[in-house]
Length: 137
Image (cartoon, rainbow, N blue to C red):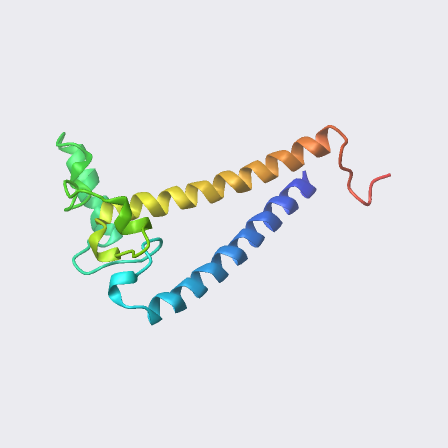
């Protein structure tokens, strides 16, 4: 079990280093481009956006008052056009806050699924004897 935990920590660390380097490189790139061609993925808070705490408190208050979950974001009825986020020329100001949260959450969930798949595959290989620890005989 110790080796499994070590492998999980090593996988998570490697993905963090990869994602951290990508975020730094994209931040430098975003600073040099004009405002009409800004990256939408992990763009951060835009002008007029609610803070994360406000998003959660307004949404849970709306759900508790039986008004539905559409109270999380002020721009919940604003349409989302994928070309604003993924086209040749992206524009983060045109993408509603709810869509940016959805895109970022999907990316984080995808990375988590990939890490889980790697860990599960390694665990399966060790269990079936396809891989062995170098110190075992």
